[in-house]
Image (cartoon, rainbow, N blue to C red; front, side, top):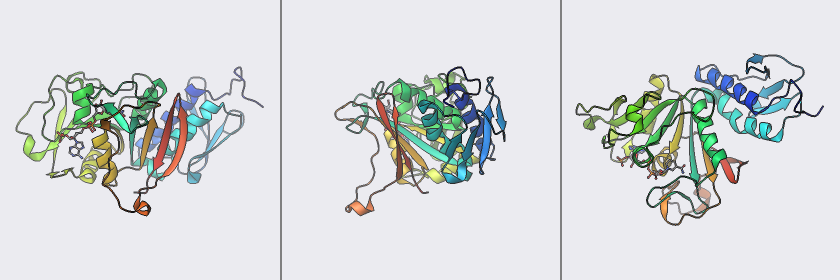
Length: 303
Ligand SMILES: NC(=O)c1ccc[n+]([C@@H]2O[C@H](COP(=O)([O-])OP(=O)(O)OC[C@H]3O[C@@H](n4cnc5c(N)ncnc54)[C@H](OP(=O)(O)O)[C@@H]3O)[C@@H](O)[C@H]2O)c1
């Protein structure tokens, strides 16, 4: 039976998103689905577990989140589930660190002046909001807050906004940034222990961690987040921040979305220490997805 628009059992994008939020909630609670399970989603978005028959989808986390559906899924729905399922089911999903960068064909995430809007298209912006909704925390570097003054909320999709985490080792960010004052979500500012001198941070909470010459110990920082119940962390940028996570073996996955544009010398995306031999290169397992006019590379690393 082909999935037609009038089929009441049809799993459309909205229902698929409800299913993903349901699965993410289980992963966030430390109790992810680890065995093959069938689900059905009602018209009101309610997810019923263990129900076979018309409209059911079976997810097999042990087979890299393989998907089987009783009804033929629309290609966009299947792609959506295939992209996000590995983030929300399986043992690894209860503690997960995923990064994202939207970059040009010449590897830049922003112009030299820091402008980064429209490097990638609207579908990728919605993808960012979806990732925020699937994670406990969204983490960015100080330059991103300084340049973009982002809200880091889920305003384009359903699902709660995550805790916002900003890495600002010397507390140099101006207090007028939205994360300090808009109360749209809880905000943690990570700084070095020697930088705290009783500094006010608006609505945000300061967390002091040991600093090293080359920045925070990211594994200690992730442990500090876990102690606060933030076990699923989405690293949204910019390039310096994501590169440090990658260089320190602290990412499970990195989404690199490439827009069809050349920016010239600007702010680079991933920059890693150089290597001499190709065989020493970091070669993640990679899947590719079309996202509007952009191409997303989903890179999985063994941590
Ligand atoms: N296209 C995209 O996907 C995307 C995403 C986000 C941002 N952007 C753009 O990218 C630009 C900002 O990116 P960026 O690469 O310049 O900077 P960034 O990653 O936003 O911020 C880097 C700064 O954050 C702090 N930091 C990051 N990791 C740290 C660590 N492990 N330990 C200690 N401190 C750490 C440091 O602050 P200190 O300098 O104080 O030491 C560091 O210099 C902006 O123009 C923004 O618009 C693009």
